[in-house]
Amino acid sequence: MNNQNYYQTIFDKAGDAIFIHDVDSAKIMDANQAAEQLTGFTRSQLLTMGVEDISAHSQGFNFPHAMSRIRQTARSGVIKFEWILQSTTGKQIPAEVCLKIIYIDQQAKVLALVRDISEIKQYQYALQSKDEYFKCLLESSADGIAILDTQAKLLYASPSLEKITGYRNRLALKKNILHLIHPEDRAQVRQFLYRELFHPQEQTQHLNYRFLHHSGQWRNHEASCKNLLLDPNIQGFLINYRDITERIEAENMVRTREKQLGHMSRCKTMGELSTALAHELNQPLAALTNYITGSILRIQNGLANNTETLDALNAALEQVQRVSNIIRSMRQFLKKGEANFKILQLNQLIHLIAPLIELKAEQGKTKIYYELSPTPIYIYADETLFSQVVINLVFNAVDALQHHTENGEVYIRTWQHQDLARMSIADNGPGLNGQNPEQLFESFYSSKIDSMGIGLTLSRSIIENHQGYLWVCEGTPGAIFNISLKAQGRE
Image (cartoon, rainbow, N blue to C red; front, side, top):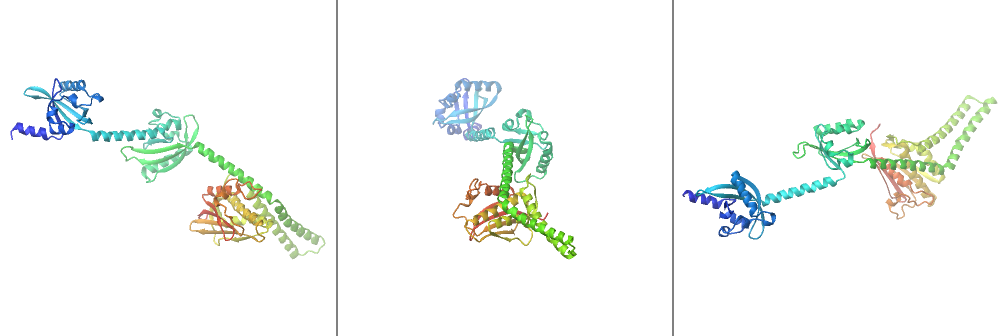
């Protein structure tokens, strides 16, 4: 094969389209098979055409533009640029073009190597669309997104930074955010980042802290963190954060109102028991008076002996303890103040409020049966609030029985099932009578005419604040209210 045939074969079989143009007119002097496939024109058709005939005029790829590129090639020797071709069907084809001046028979020609980059452009467009999509998400998101380095310096912040913190993005970059964390929370945040640095967790970790707003106000933030130091696109801690100040204030307000409602409910309960309390206190006080008076008279008349006097004093002491138990139960039940969670023995707590339960039962002519766990069960609870729930459930049962049966019975049971402390208050009354169980826990719903309808709602709220559950189901007969809390180890 001679050299001419050799180069002709390379020209024809090349994978990229090759055009040879006249320097002065941009007319096509020759084209290979790949050029035919790319444009859809035959070689004979192409040889009658100029560069403007295979270009997308609507996109500005016209003859003046082509000649400008050829002149640039004449000056520089080789240039590379992007162009849009137009095929015989009108299809527009993005292409990468490399122009070079060559000499054929000592005459300057333009060699154009043309590569179809349609797939590359589609991929770039898809990436650009995705970038714009995520950029739109970031700009419209109410939550903040930030990237921190290992020194807690801000590498990136989404546009919501200024809305959440008051700081402008460009002024905050490269700043150490630990200086803006509340001093009492700073060590916690530092330790959190340190743990993520050396012991990264698979799951996203969450943290609450106070952040200094640009206005000078301390705001409550909630953040999640993911260690992406090894991700080449991130190379830092990815932080998602939000301002939860209003939410915390609302939660505090709800808790305050719940405490106020709880205290009102307890006072109302004591008011309902006032007659029974007076009777229950008068009995031991009268007995106490009799024991002491009798002992004094015997001593004054010289009729007393040590044994009789000691028996009378012991009997008087029992009555004092009875009064003391009632008063202690009342004081505990009416206690007002901040919640005080601690490890409590469930059965002991029930024994403490038993005097009040017995008073209500006597008033309602109901029998109370205690079926308590033979082994201690420990719960993490506020004594006053948990007692209020139990008393409220028992009192509701007694009230329900008063109107439906003369032989009312209430069963208070405690037991432990695996890691759960369980308690139930069951009665032999009419049960739910087809009522929706969940409706009983709705605010202001009550089957009692003189009730405010907050007892069961408040009780469920208290138990949920104890990380537990309160629900009701049908008994055989009656209704059963169930409480489930996580059991604790002994204090």
